[in-house]
Image (cartoon, rainbow, N blue to C red):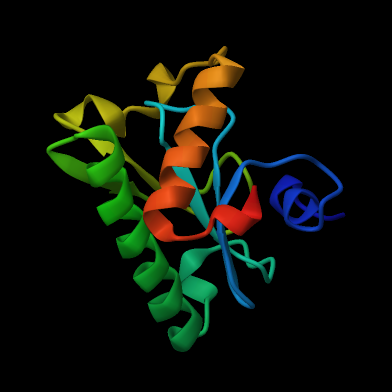
Length: 136
């Protein structure tokens, strides 16, 4: 059975995409630690990041770094947080989020009811910073 991320990538489920190429996508999580919280995901469904081919792992991190720069720029955070957990969805993904302290690393504190307008605005800001407005 396809992961929820595979279903988002294929368009079966909606997603607020901010980046897409032939190997990697990035979209906002539906339960953000902060507005702008983005998941960087390989298109190929691989459960553990340690099982990725080295080239894909490197590319995934290149994209995460671009997203991180955009997150800091768009949301004025001191840093871009980077986290791999992987227990909630069996499909490799990197969490990239605005961070001013360590609280963002506690995913038990996510916003389970984010404002849809704020989420749309966050996606628009990130797409503008990344030059990917065509994904809207």
